[in-house]
Image (tube, rainbow, N blue to C red; front, side, top):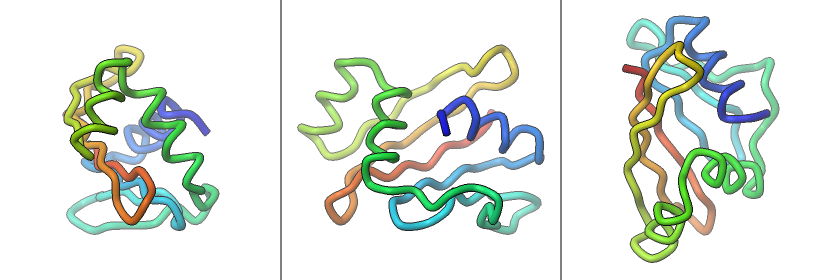
Length: 100
């Protein structure tokens, strides 16, 4: 599962936010309620780290490791832009993304 897959999944369902954390399935805020995607796999720590590496450039990854958190703005295939907060939590990388 790539970051593009996750963002497209959210966009297609009208989600406003995406929540990614190791040990749980991706979650999405849709209509003010948070839903876990039963049809997506539970994320492992290496999955969330790989997604962060896919989203962030080299400098942002260095900042993530140094400061334990980084914010980024990204565009996905011309369908939407996102604001992302990528952070370390309990020894793994987590992230929250807002579709804008």
